[in-house]
Image (cartoon, rainbow over all chains, first blue to last red; front, side, top):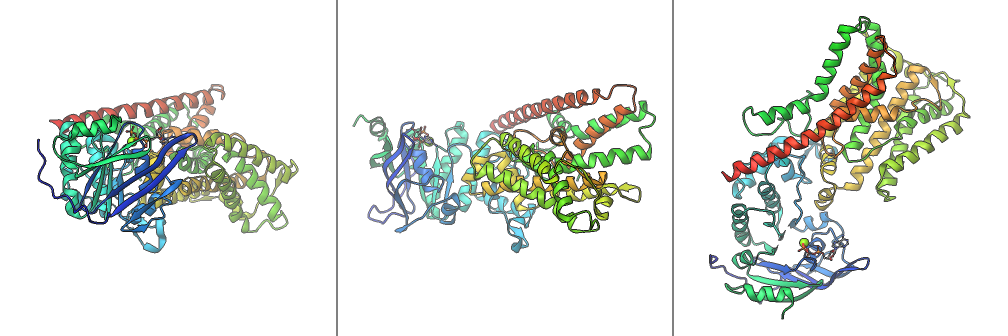
Length: 259
Length: 346
Ligand SMILES: Nc1ncnc2c1ncn2[C@@H]1O[C@H](COP(=O)(O)OP(=O)(O)OP(=O)(O)O)[C@@H](O)[C@H]1O
Ligand SMILES: [Mg+2]
């Protein structure tokens, strides 16, 4: 399966998002030891590495969930002060987390708009009243553009299959991302058909002018969607290369530390 | 506000279109508390001749109102995966503090009405802040400590004495009747309505369900998790303060021993009302049915020729049934999910 010809962004172009010298320890465990990562507008970067390499930690740092001990995250050349997930969201950075980040006890539409519900009257803030119709309309509007089909907005998400739930999480991130979208192993728990749908969606994300970071252990998926791959080992970035068909072995060798 | 209202969305259960067997099972499990209450009432009406008198029903309802008021706040805490065992002691502390602060010289003082929930709010905030900001993730232990402190404070403030005399408004709230209906019951229905609107119709309420459903995800998605959890305890303390108001009105006194052991009834009402201890599930409306189930069992047994010691045994058994129903509900939901996945593949 050869990927569509994709236009990688000009390598001379300044990165949209860049992380420098990211360090983070949990007590004696060092999760990040000076990791580097960058992504350009319209580029899909695969973030690779063995279990425990620090990929998720790096992603959580960009998402504002983990506060770095040291290091900078810059967006369009401006240093971001990421203290909470809200900060990252405010800059248009959206994340699909490795562990399914949906609320099983809420419906599809409620999961979609959580944290961004429109309330009236506005001055009541979070004590304002919700409109089920608003949530539903906003879900339908976005679901149409995406691959999520046969999903009723009023359905409780806990009653749906893993793939459907992941699709909702992806749809939420896609709908609200305006600069960078990060997907941490979005296909790990999915079947073949569900993975295909997610990958097809990911391939179309650069058209929206987004920078895309995708974590995956599946080299076939990486080669099909990514422009560039960055490899982490032991909390450090150990290399990066432009992705071309047939590069799988080289990537695997780099991940395992054979070169 | 129907008993169908047990999940979050309006049309439940969302099991796709049409009637199917699993969907009906799920619906029955969700309607459990109402079915149990109806069955109990029918049984007692049939076998206990004095059960269905106006006087007895008024008594039953007034008694259940206090448990229900406590249960309403307890529900919000259990919704966010917590528990608050200090609510009974809030009854004692609030009656004593109000009595001492406003004095019996001026028993007409309307300030008493405000003071009750205020005392509860302070205790609730104390609990919430300790658990969240004090980083003690065991709400049971924290609120057991608070229970001791509040009980001790009530004894200290009152000097161990019971003082009679509450303002006319408080007495009316606890004892009065409007068109035959106990004022306390109407009061609790009002509280229930307020909480229902907060939980079902506002953004804060939806976030409370979200935090209960998955606290980690709530934090990842930028919801104010800490403030949501603190607010749940604050609400719980406040409703316990209102329960103190009703208790003081009913007994016309302030006692450091008031409300002793009521926390168990409150938690029981929430659990047999079908809230999940796994968090994020259930309807505040069902707390009413839970409180009434407890009330009906206690009251009904008094009219039968059996020892009243059977009441806790019966209530305990119902708790176990309720917990099993919660487990069964999870099982049915998993089955529905599996079937959904299979349909998707087809
Ligand atoms: N909250 C935490 N507390 C303690 N240690 C942690 C925490 N989060 C991550 N770590 C540790 O940091 C290291 C990197 O973990 P991370 O989850 O970032 O790896 P990963 O590359 O995403 O792995 P995987 O492919 O398994 O998802 C691991 O050794 C992990 O055990
Ligand atoms: Mg990971």
